[in-house]
Image 1 (cartoon, helix red, strand yellow):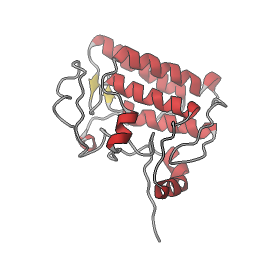
Image 2 (cartoon, rainbow, N blue to C red; image 1 turned 135 degrees about the vertical axis):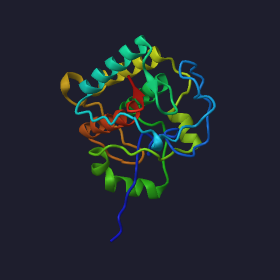
Image 3 (spheres, one colour; image 1 turned 90 degrees about the vertical axis):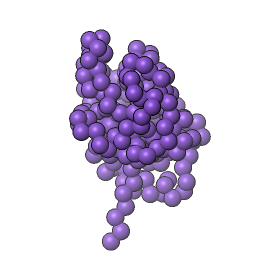
Length: 203
């Protein structure tokens, strides 16, 4: 028996800097010192929050807690990206689920394999430790997004995903690896995506 396991995130894989051994790209948010010189092995982060969201409303509630911690000066970024960049990354992934991925594609083998594990991936926590290519990371992440800017943008996109508690019918774009996605699939994707990255922010 062949067991197929494919980990797929925004552009098809979990994020670049949340991966062991990826090339260091400088982070310049001075509120989170040390990030500009040291790449953290996120697999070894012992106190990362293990989140499980059942709805977009639960993500929004968590964002409120993170914002309150930021105002108090107690928010800690445990991974390699500052909060503003994480919010921006998550928000731009939401934009892509409405507007498309602008021609981004993956090799045939990945596009063939990923749909086979789509249901499993959308219903389990996204694992950490798989890296994007440099090109993929440059498209998926921006290193210098301010906290308030990223947070406002992410909240705006979350409001589009599940208005009035139901998946938006506008969630119709194909994922570059998973392929065809129903609106509910996209909601599950964004819940899992948020769990992965917001877990590295600790109030």
